[in-house]
Length: 233
Image (cartoon, rainbow, N blue to C red; front, top):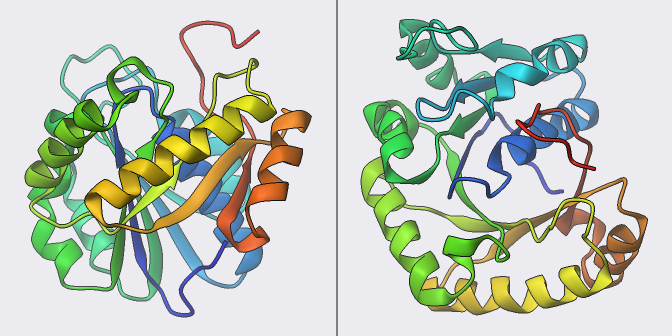
């Protein structure tokens, strides 16, 4: 994975179930391991879905020295989590690498739009996390609709694609190979680079297939940190 030489802001957007939260958490951890003396912060901005939250990984993140900012009332039984003033301060801190985990689809992306001025004032990359095996992102027209809605809601331009071809424990070499073709097809449609590909490290066959396709700088090996509503097995 190629990270900026100076503090940068990375935004993870995508459709519900695309794996963007797991991607954001693993991205932050990998960045911190590679740059142990850098200030790194992860902000959980998912105002839509309280069950798939990077806040679940707080302990793992903080053990590495990563600052974690969550919304008021995150992971509680309060109905509407709220953005905090502290989030804007962290986003604007040009001495810190900042990773934003933004809620799914255009409704969740509105939280990102609220901070569009802060984000636009510094070097940033906005990822569209794409799992081409999800029902609503299985073809180019459907994916493009979601992509445009998210981009409009953020009030910013998406810079690149984060490929995340997976079917949880059923991910094998065929999933990686087929997913690569689908992701590249969509990337051509929107004329954006595929900046990174994520693969769960426990899926040995999938990892081997990904390593045969992608260079080390294009591949993020991911561990499971985010609690799901259902068992992965």
